[in-house]
Length: 487
Ligand SMILES: Cc1cc2nc3c(=O)[nH]c(=O)nc-3n(C[C@H](O)[C@H](O)[C@H](O)COP(=O)(O)O)c2cc1C
Ligand SMILES: [Mn+2]
Image 1 (cartoon, protein in one colour):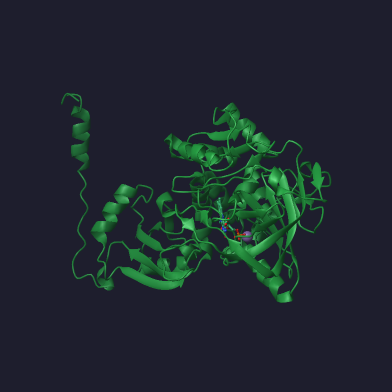
Image 2 (cartoon, protein in one colour):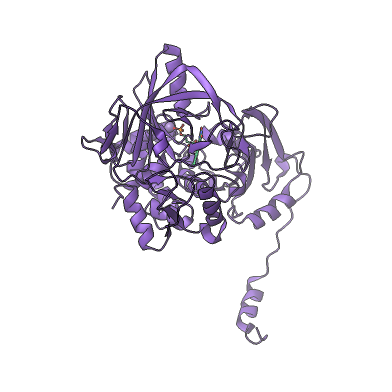
């Protein structure tokens, strides 16, 4: 049974002992971060935290909701994250004309067959309270995460778990992306969609037609909806359709009070407004999920025209910073959910691991069933051409007998197998906007490493050595005598 909203999910994790209520008053400025960060760094991601009394606001704050594998699985209602990958794989193989499904862009057609399209309703809980006259963000417990957030002349408050809804002005297609929101004052914010993201593409189209762009920022909602806004879906797939697929029930939407944008009806808070494509303003700095501050840079500006919310709104926030943090588990969910989609284009891929330390854009390890010379290099180039995999700064490809989830074993195989000149590929190209190592923003070098076994056809002049394994008989013998040795 799908969660209807955030509070149903909160109830479930609370009943399982996975959420802790904090009754003491806390400051949304830095204090919530320090408490939450300690939780994230404790064993297995700690617990979700429900701050009942937040200084300066009547609304409570909840953090670290998705910050463990257990809670991430509960959020998506699966026993393990691979269950979703298997569901997608089934769906893909059920569709008979194989040629039709070769491209990721055809996925909407497949999902279309199922019954998960979002539905519009009229009376929405997120519109219990409507503030059109003097919308004021300052009454909400919006947090300041890290000391230098917002720079020196700014309060540095950011909405960190927002779902930003926009529409393509040409096709009318909706998009929902999680882009952090820098709050400048009671009715003005930044809009930090990186240039590569779908929201930014919609914005570019508005700029071209010289029209104001309506948008809405929704906060809270059932966990599948929140997760989906962070999922790297192709532009053609509506995140709310994907959320419906994940929760096995359509997402109920409602039309905004002041614009033609639809938002999840059961979310907690909706900030409606518009962007003027001629206007930018310095956004950031912000303590980001790389563990460094992302620099202050010009970004579009969002003007608030109306705020709607539940009467007893619960405000969810996430703290990003040095891994492991809550968003690492959202990223791990993405790794598992998107593996079958990557395999649509590259069936030879067996598994992939995006280690948390690489904060997702810095490092990916891929195992493949290698069958021809240069196969690993083809995968490297191929992945650099696929959606948000283009950001992978270091891609390592290993043979399919390497368990890429075992980092120690993988490191041993890679370090022994590589000739650093023959087996490395360097390429220039787009980088994640959060990269700070390249000379320029958003453009720089990536490296691919082919750590597979090399063949003669690949120029290897020697025979590949055999890996050590004990004989089966000796293993059996030692097994049978184990007690006798005195262990
Ligand atoms: C907690 C969190 C914060 C994020 N903040 C941003 C952000 O500020 N800007 C951005 O472009 N992407 C951000 N992302 C990544 C996007 O949500 C992600 O790339 C998503 O696929 C974007 O949706 P889109 O493909 O529809 O543009 C964030 C992700 C998470 C989990
Ligand atoms: Mn999208």
